Image (tube, rainbow, N blue to C red; front, side, top):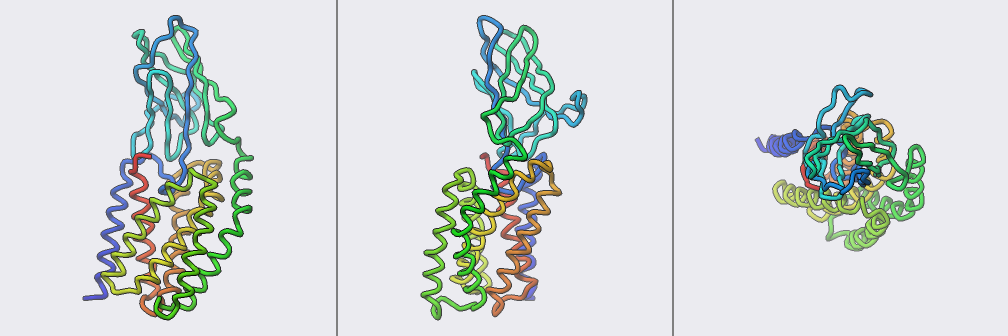
Length: 315
């Protein structure tokens, strides 16, 4: 009877995470950075009308004959104010079109346009009856150079991640409780500040990492109390493995996903790798208290919760 409780508990967490994903059009990995579009308007019409509202259409056909509005879900949305518009998405289609309502009573539709940059910037020329949208430099780094721009910071920050990785492995291999290994724990906590400081170099990654850490640490505390696992050991391992896996994952794979196209399949494949890696770390660290199957379920619950909640956060 007791052995079934972790399974029921963890599957309930997974179900909540899956339900949280339903509003999303195309998924991208939980709380990581997401691609954007910013639109600045210039006017050939005088006096220049104000923007009242707008729709960004997403299309897979080059003529946008299959156009559908960008779905709203979590942070994914298209918004306008009186002077400009912008959008953020887990992933965009290949082609796009704008339809904007102006204060002069005219609804103008744009040409079909694409997206080259991760954070794309466009100039929208407002003409008598339509819009001309042109992507400009300055909103991000063009592919494939953006891949190099992400890998280089990762390589430069590698020393900041190497020592914590060694300490994490040491804590996991020894599987020592806090009472018997105070010095190792304190060293691990202090050294973990290195990758945390390194993440400050990439501010867009920081918020997502902190949210992920808060969610998973809270679940780890609840799990340790409920199952009477080693609190210090479990929290230290969850803390340090997230400091290692999440930033490195975002730095290396973020733009590779953009090149290949954001999709549920790509996202789940990436999450699958993280799930297995973190399950192995948990199983190694808590091998005296937990079997590998339980470690797999715990890692699944932690990742599913942070993934699902990250999908519905409004940023």
